[in-house]
Image (cartoon, rainbow, N blue to C red; front, side, top):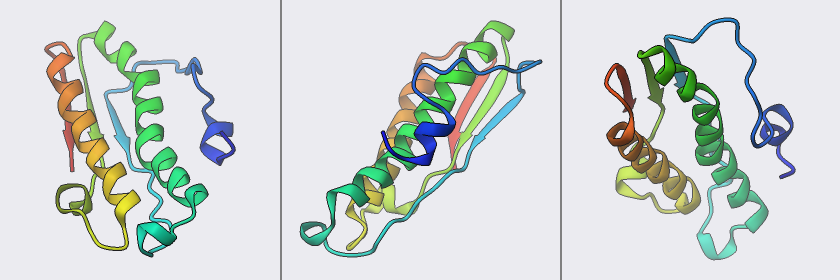
Length: 120
């Protein structure tokens, strides 16, 4: 993956932290260009999905195991109304945001007591 996210946090990266964080806020976002999907360059919408959805998943996967072992933690993922409604000229952004919302719901159902996940 050629994005800066891939360079900052490569897949399967072992996050080195001195302590288990009490909270993680996934707040990275990239809107990309606003245009109809048919004309939207695939490189741009792939970057939108990589930053907004894949980035959230990567950072969560790096931190959540520590929270589960500690028996506590809170993860807040930033979403968008676009993910609930779908917005014209923002199809890729809407899809990525919907993915963050669904990811958060699914993960909250599989996480242990003491950890809390939500989308804002």
